[in-house]
Amino acid sequence: MFANDKSIDNLEALFKEIKKHIELQGQYIKLDLVEKLTILLSTLILILALIILGAMALYYFSFMLVYALVPVVGSIIASYAVIGAVILIAAIGIYLMRRKLIFQPMVNFLARLFLEDSHK
Image 1 (tube, rainbow, N blue to C red):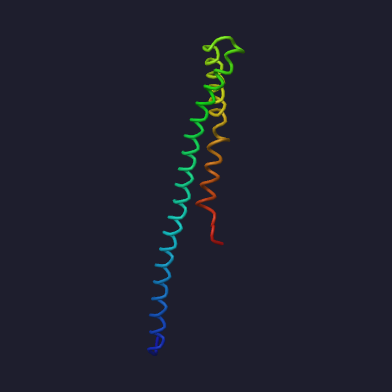
Image 2 (image 1 turned 120 degrees about the vertical axis):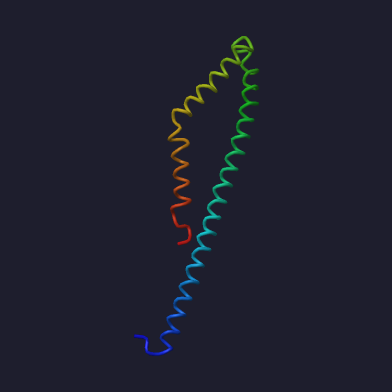
């Protein structure tokens, strides 16, 4: 079938190019994975920082509201109870809407990050 050396040389060159292409594809996949994991981790760190700062702000604002409500409700204990009830109702509301507020956006983000081709 291969009568001359030129055909064999062409076939060897083709195999070398295929091997080189496969190695480059493997490196590309690794780089793409590192890029996506970097985006994921930086997003998680950003969300964690925002949650911590938001919790601190909620803490200080709740104390401010407690002391602001004292003249309205008559005692500091009642003010703490009102603010505690509001925070508890907000927590229950977030828990009841967790699929819409937390799970679905997270699934959409991860699907967009890992399933869509960003290098078209």
